[in-house]
Length: 279
Image 1 (cartoon, helix red, strand yellow):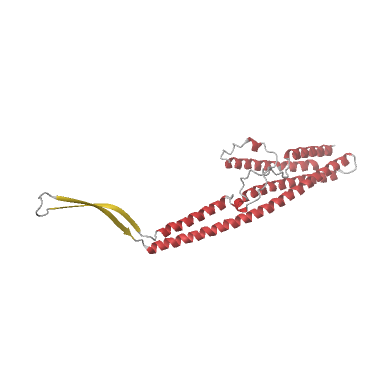
Image 2 (cartoon, one colour; image 1 turned 90 degrees about the horizontal axis):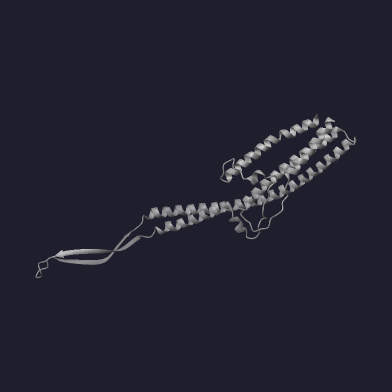
């Protein structure tokens, strides 16, 4: 009865996990620009924890920073603010226009023919206007202030990028180490469960000892699954912190968990425990 109760508790935890998986698939479809139900078949059939397809590239740190969209955006804003200063300073100069004009005159010169005489002249026209220096200087000061703000925002984006990269690397290393340790603990507890089952079948231990071993096995598997999810989250944050997009590096092998093998082994151990308790 206690074994059946333990199996029931584990089964009760499965529906919320499946609901969370369906929510994640719907969010993935929206990110891909599809309807919530139009999920790629590869994502639906995924039964193994994903990993980064390439190792982190080394080399120029500045080039890696420029992979980030927020850094590129801050850089372009700074360039635009600097260009606006030049536009504002150009308004200090007077506006001069040079063109051509045509003038005509008609008169009756004495002693000449009485017909009207028309004279046409073609010459340059020069006009200019002076700016409102107070308004122009105010616009220059405004452009300078915007450039200072853009520069401060650019500096902030660089500092934030460096901070996030350092944190992402630290979290990724810690998550990977924790995942490996918990995976090893899960394997050890599963082996202990197998030995406890053999001892129970041989009459060398009680059913209570076997139930305790089974409870430890379930708890360690759940902890390993949570660590696996944490490792995936840290991989995503690492990819975002470094801008992503690199393809030239060779693949890196990361610790993964085969969910199908864990699920089948758990079902077999649960069935064995239930059968022995009924006997």
